[in-house]
Image (cartoon, rainbow, N blue to C red; front, side, top):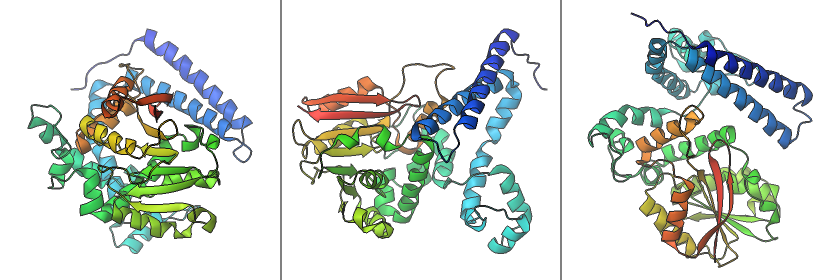
Length: 388
């Protein structure tokens, strides 16, 4: 039978007051900053206000929700992802006009699916994302952890992903060497994910200060979205996009639609980042969210490979990744724990503290010095390192 649960009035009143204040501040921001005239700074301010409002609302929901109801909803939540996966498999997003709508009957005619099933999916899925990799892997996570008495596996060849896809090839190598089509979809999905969840890369580091003719080597870059964005914004820069050969080849084909003034400043380089760097003396060696899928030992090796190409006191190793905050409890963003569970399932690695990042850098080369650090509230960080 349902539990009888009453939240504390002492906890509820200040939280409701906080939500009201956050909401009023957000409304003032939206009314005074029309999107057509707003600057990047204005837009970021609105995003921060919306995030504060969302955080307070989630705390209120957690406080007033009956434990039984919360648990039941959590158990059913896998259906949201299943619905997303089905919507994508049926190519429904491509059938709905950007500024319009489509009935279940119309979509059924276009896809050959059942109107009833499509209606159920529409109820659950109100956005689009490629979800089958995480969904399938998540189904194997518990049994994978149970094999080691609920300890994380020793490396990225013994993950829940490996169990789900019946392989011993680590996930990112799998995308590059076993299933290039899946890897290409993953790369495109990550572009959309980071656009939606993180600040633009140019706000994380002062790229505008780089001298004319400087080269950015985007390591493990997949589609090269970061590097292409940067050289589009800063015409004085060039870039090298590095990843596995098949991935780079697909990205190069897709990039043919770019303006010639941009495309002429891109070099596409099939490269395995577990081997010594082949591009020597670049201004920036960018490693954006590629290290969190590797053990500390492999990250140290990857750093050593970058050092091979760096010019002392001139080249910068720029790491964009997650930095785990020291705090736990209600003020800790839930995204950290969600990301950690996801990354454990996919790679057997979880997020790292600043101290742990520094330790790995020193293990790679004692001369590596972190000279610039920017950590956002959501844990996304830019760490700039030189070879002294």
